Length: 411
Image (cartoon, rainbow, N blue to C red; front, side):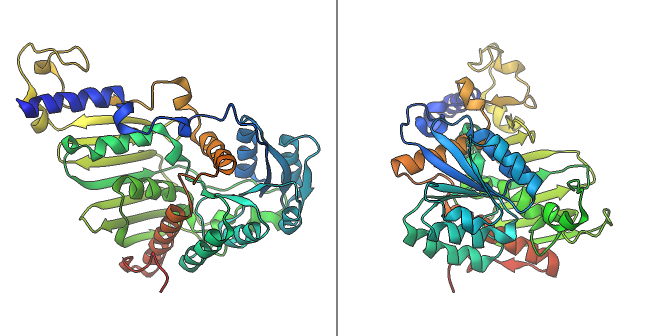
């Protein structure tokens, strides 16, 4: 009887999102409304991503973008138009860092430049919000730690879903013993398109389409799968011990150097295996994360506005079915409950819980600066994800299994 009650409670908590038990409640997931200290920001890299961040910063009280930097004049112009009145423009990020009015910078440049720009910003006394992936190489990721620690400044990495209540609820569900032992995770991020940006002037091709070229980019693994990698490491509270994978340029014969499809498998010390697939030639599956437990499966779906569902294994559900007994989740009888029917997992119980998570991440960054708190997504998880990405790409290029056990610390 005890197991029966526990199973019913697990389903009820899942349906209600179990906010009190599955996620920390408080200001972490709310926008700043009462903060009084102004945070002045400079955005280094005002391309599509940088300008999107500027737009989101407009909705954060007492956070103001007062400077922007880009080497492409048209992009810089657009960034300044979105920024505060009389904001200053720079074509050299080092000049921006000399501006004493700037408290913090957003680093939104090609991946190969993240380390250089982040180090310069810290040495200039600026707090740093660095877009993912944090660093291009394993060595950079390891070296950055001492610089961050010695600076005493805030360093946040752009894994915004750590600020998404939905994933906190998912983590709580998966860690609940009734979910059963987690054995496999499948992640997909599939699109149907060449992944290119339009280029008006050929001289800017490698700058605008930097994701296509190995001197600048870690490709699909760094730009897409990296987000899912960070979530998996966080939910498991563990790091993978090895990785293998394959990729290639098999469709888009357009001069690109990074793969147009990637497939990798990470193995963890407890036996869990997590696979990642990114395609650019077929959008079926889209964005998906599937967590397979002994008793249930959690599915996350939707590239824009993530949704999540719980699917209960028939063998687990059968042990709690009794004729005509009312189920506290749906009001249906347990006898007629469909084992294949998805149970929605809610993000939260407030409208703001479904807000854009990147906005929450930026609000959290400003909050950490004002209140001297540590970011939820910081150097440590940024380092680990960057190393996983670099090793996965190395495994694909060499077509070898890569050992990760010693990769997370200085040799």
